[in-house]
Image 1 (spheres, helix red, strand yellow):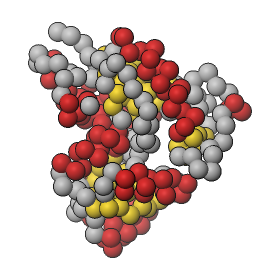
Image 2: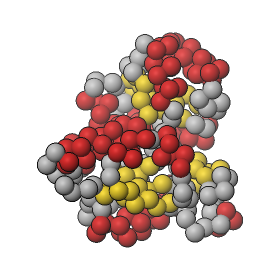
Image 3: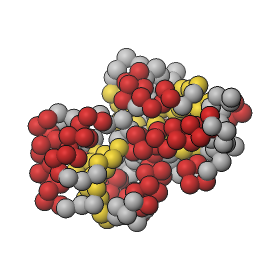
Length: 235
């Protein structure tokens, strides 16, 4: 029985036990080769995000939170894809931001692309999209609009706290979207369940959708099919 091997690409520094804890499905996949785009860099060597850049928040090994431009991260992620390509079955980028130039000989999965495909299949075209900080709001709105969705953006500055979720639930009720989408990778499942029960709508996180798709494929592999042969998931 062939064990699936997946390259896991984070935008911060490794190790990231918090991501493995938030996305437990990763541990069902098989063997993980984890790389961080900022591995080996001191904080002072990380440039500030450009005014016209796509800001992404992540953390360094010591827990320091930094905001980094997607354009700075993209070539660093690509170098790790190139390094791992010969020994993995697929790559998963653990970031909700867009990296349109990433490519490999093996499939390169990106949560936003997978989520957009899945939400369209489910008929969810009107979205309330939740982002973690104000600087991402206009970029996220453009990203989802370019993918063909009608969306309203809300910023969840307080994180998954009960009061923040209650305020968000009130905003959802006034907007009446088809679904709520956390433009995150690894928003707490319990918090999403609470919100879904409160508003009576499906609630998604981009990272969870991507990992669930990958788990389904690798389970298929263990039953004898190719884990990277399904174009709906991997291309």
